[in-house]
Image (cartoon, rainbow, N blue to C red; front, side, top):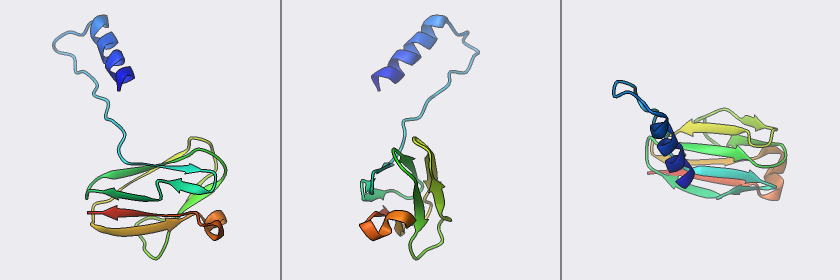
Length: 112
């Protein structure tokens, strides 16, 4: 947050005319990290309309729906690769990592 504030102050110091639009940077929403053989957090609860961001921190993984069709399987092979999905409908959305499901790499998004 402090970095964001510093960037905004810097932009203001550079000078903008009153007619120029200031870029607003949104804070990242709910985040799930793929670390080793885990989704962290494993269970995430959000409100309808929010977007979840999955970030691969290490290895090759998938974010594969488990018993629903809210999205198609996503393969994440690169470090810091991001997958984002908005959830407009309430419900529970379980998912797993195909290569690591046998080791318990599973998660769920709960949308209220």
